Image (tube, rainbow, N blue to C red; front, side, top):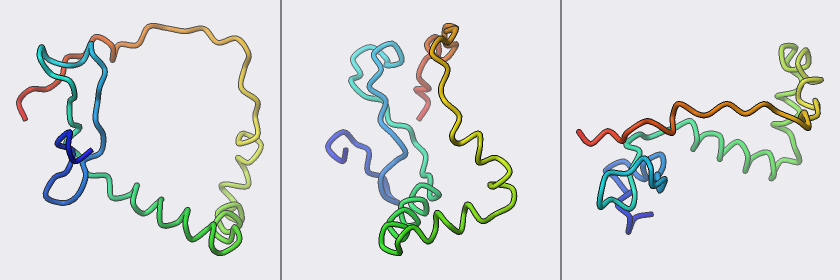
Length: 97
């Protein structure tokens, strides 16, 4: 990622976009210039959960609002889904950065 220019002053940027239709002519990658610190926090919580025997997962599921929606977490995905074309596929990259 660093070789593709994804490393910034505060660490790695959020993402690299290799989607050809969203790249400018001559570009092979577009850098998403954002830092999402909450992703780092989620990684730390996932590591803690693994090391502490699912303590964080149990704590999360002990919350009444989560318990009220637990059935939705186990809902099966529908077999047939109507697909609509994505408006994002028509978006052009922001070249002002």
